[in-house]
View 1 (cartoon, rainbow, N blue to C red):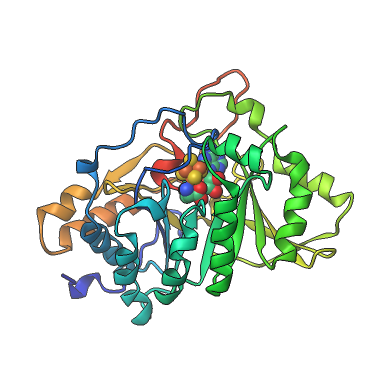
View 2: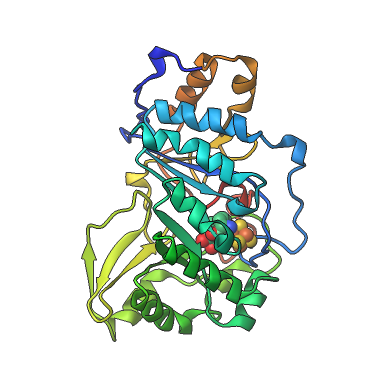
Length: 339
Ligand code: SAM
Ligand code: SF4
């Protein structure tokens, strides 16, 4: 139920940043177990704790009425949540009304062959596909179960459906550093952007994250030996900073939470599938929106809880890869709040 007072009541945090971007983790479950993201034997949330898709829709709609213009569905793997397509279809009414500018999705690509054309039908124009290696055996190792061929079929289907594709590649020291150039050439040759991501210290994993950490400042310097990289103002609403690569004609993004703090322009908050709102990816402070959502059929309580949460959005994160401290800086896994 929409109340007039909530319409267009824009959200601005204490540091003057307008909050216009909501990332929604629709499930913490995933069909992969990427080694830097999860442990092998993850305990997932009990299904009874999950908000229904109707409740998630109510929450998203409340944010949209409060000024959110971009919505990204993520996870876990968003495309493994049951009935996810009906959720996207319902949300697309906000695209049709013009209240929302964009719905995007971050996916591991395993289910994309099945869903790409439906996503396009519901107004999705761009997808981010995570792909850390093109080598089938290495892909199977890093995801602990994934088949790279399935992701390639997904990418093909997304292309055929007319979706713009950005690849996300986590830079992993000693694992895929030698694949960065081939991946970039391939992605750009196929008309896809490529964004490199630094590993972030989130959630317990089985190995040592310090050993995997590869600063992107180093990657950029070594790329400059063979390529002409020029800073460009291109923005997709997220934290990546883009460069144009003269030799390939494509765009290369860098998400560098550790070597360059991207917080000053942060316009995002993150909602989990249990209705918890994280105001910063790199901080534990959170607000429960499930209780105000369920307490009343109207959205006044919810709106007040959102305002209170935004007033607590911190200036920035405290990520640090600490050689002496092997534990994560943030205890929750990335799969709870999404990328
Ligand atoms: N399952 C989907 C996927 O893999 O694209 C969406 C969720 S996943 C958590 C979102 C992004 O976060 C992926 O690109 C993934 O590679 C990245 N990611 C996961 N754990 C990370 C970590 N600890 N540091 C940096 N990136 C991470
Ligand atoms: Fe799943 Fe994405 Fe995490 Fe890999 S990065 S385990 S695909 S949620």
